[in-house]
Image 1: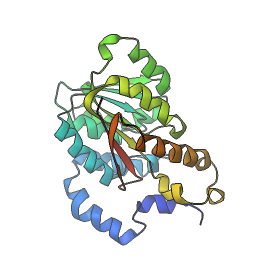
Image 2 (image 1 turned 135 degrees about the vertical axis):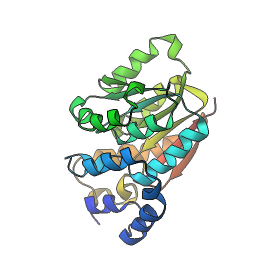
Image 3 (image 1 turned 90 degrees about the vertical axis):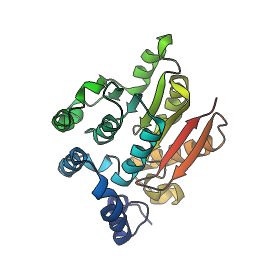
Length: 235
């Protein structure tokens, strides 16, 4: 069976009716208006399908509040749906370092972020993530200073992001990795996956196995959206 974009759109439930039930009953009624607006805009953006799924966003919102997160990092911004989600859930003096090479995509959603009154919390860094993380690590005051990080970027680099983020995240802090089930491709035969998803699939399989054996973190692999893995730093 070949993976199709329509499968990703339905979420991992692979039942459009059931997924819509979850969204319409529990997710959309609680989704803040700025997020609704940006989600609607994403429907007209060529890469909008890559944005964080709203059901995953609802879970992340709860995590941010349980954690009382204040200082955060976002690796992979796109149009800013997950970024806006984070900004809405941290205090007014909270800070987000948002890293992405595509400023144009970020600026697509920036008017919504500004209307929501949370743009002052965001420092956008136009850079590849590994370089930006290395710059943060050069400053010793950044070590173990971050409460929460969200990663939705190049799947091939997830392990490298993980090693650097573990130096920046506090003990007890959380890292969330998006797309860790990658449209269900992780359990499909390799020959059924084509194009850009082939290397991403293999990297995701390897990363998931790596996290399962990493005793520095407590993990929960959750089948919402396109799969998210929640990592709590233990040591």
